[in-house]
Amino acid sequence: LIQLYIPLNFLGVLYREIKQSLTDLDRMFTLLEREREIADAPGARPLAIEHATVRFEHVDFGYHPERQILHDVSFEIPGGKTVAVVGPSGSGKSTLARLLYRFYDVDGGRITVDRQDVRQVTQDSLRRAIGIVPQDTVLFNDSVRYNIAYGRTSATQAEIEAAARAAHIHAFIAAQPRGYDTMVGERGLKVSGGEKQRIAIARTLLKNPPMLIFDEATSALDSASERAIQGELASAARGKTALVIAHRLSTIVDAHQIIVLESGRVTERGTHAELLASGGTYARMWKLQQSGSGERSMPEQTVPAT
Ligand code: ADP
Ligand code: MG
Image (cartoon, rainbow, N blue to C red; front, side, top):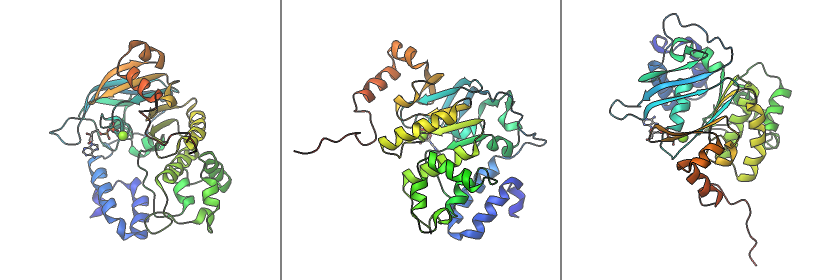
């Protein structure tokens, strides 16, 4: 019965999950729900990537019919460029990321990659082409090695380690008695939000796909680690098509275009300099963060008590 509504490409993952942990049942059903909504169109073709140009065209979306979240959102990420999205919490930024990865389908408008509607290509080919560091990473109840190599199972140990080093998580892993064989997840090693985020970053660096989504990818890290990893993320994004959702504006000043999203609508767009000059929401957010009051993370330096 289950096979009726699980796309084949998902069975491998689901099987692992079932086998390894029945306590994950809740989550599995959530995945099933989603997968049931989102299925390959009949005759769906693999995504053919040329430049990896992403376009959102008049996108409307709501998780529930009675509450529309995104309203007529349009923007383009030219192949190889970075578009950053900023805006208040709840404005719909993560929703954009989820729609591009096709966790959900749009209600109106369309999303294309190199002119192909994401609903018309196979999910597997779309997701292979995208590396995503989500806001909240869920790890598999499996080894650290599996969790990092998940996006590219053919990776060698040396490649896995290189990715882990770049994500500043290698030392932590190496310090565990079982190293990369350490089990993580509910019944394994407890890892913090920051460590999960680093594992997701390592996974994405290793996968090395043509399109990247960073959804507040370093939000769980302290500012020193964030600065250190930011360089790695920037070099990973070079030449790739990237959708970067930023919680700290200083990390996106070089973006090709910055989009301000408020209540599900694009209210401003332009380069950092253009948006500062226009003196709108972005300029206000920038001033707030420069003065420090907009910082969500720990202060960078503490003054020793005297
Ligand atoms: P942001 O990332 O900008 O903080 P989100 O895209 O996560 O915002 O959320 C936009 C809106 O959609 C919020 O009002 C949020 O409560 C709602 N929302 C997010 N995820 C879901 C979901 N799975 N089901 C219903 N509503 C959701
Ligand atoms: Mg979000």
